Amino acid sequence: MTRPAPGTVLCPLDDIADPGARGFVFGGGTTRWEVFVIRHGDLVRVYENSCPHTGTPLETLPDRFLTADQSQILCSTHGARFRLDDGHCVAGPCVGDRLAAVALSIDDDGRVRLGDEAPE
Image 1 (cartoon, one colour):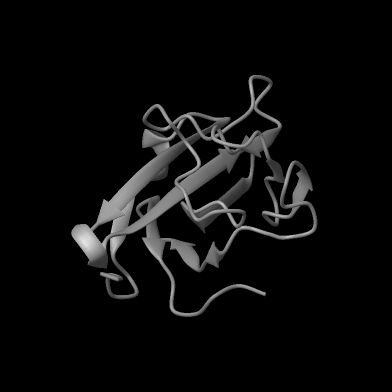
Image 2 (cartoon, one colour):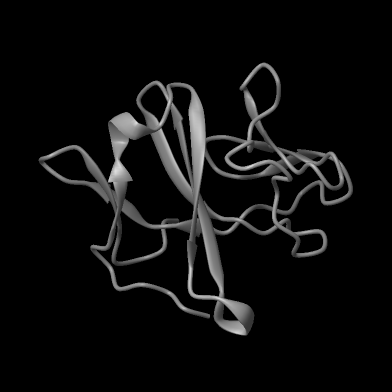
């Protein structure tokens, strides 16, 4: 998997709607790595774009990661729903599992960057 170096800039935070989400792809083929950024008020999280049920990407349309009311993350393949703050699955075939969190930071210029360590 093509995982970029810590500190890699994903985008300015202002490029993500509030609430909203945006996906990012690194590499291709068998080394492809996909993540998405969630923004909801002061909450900003990055998760790997992979449903814990089957490993498929969560969205079928670009950047459509949230439920209609934008209160949860939605797997469009299986209908699983995940909490925004910790990626824990609360409904669907993978209840009790969670999305893989990716460390992030927001720099002084308001850009979302990949962090050094996976969050707890």
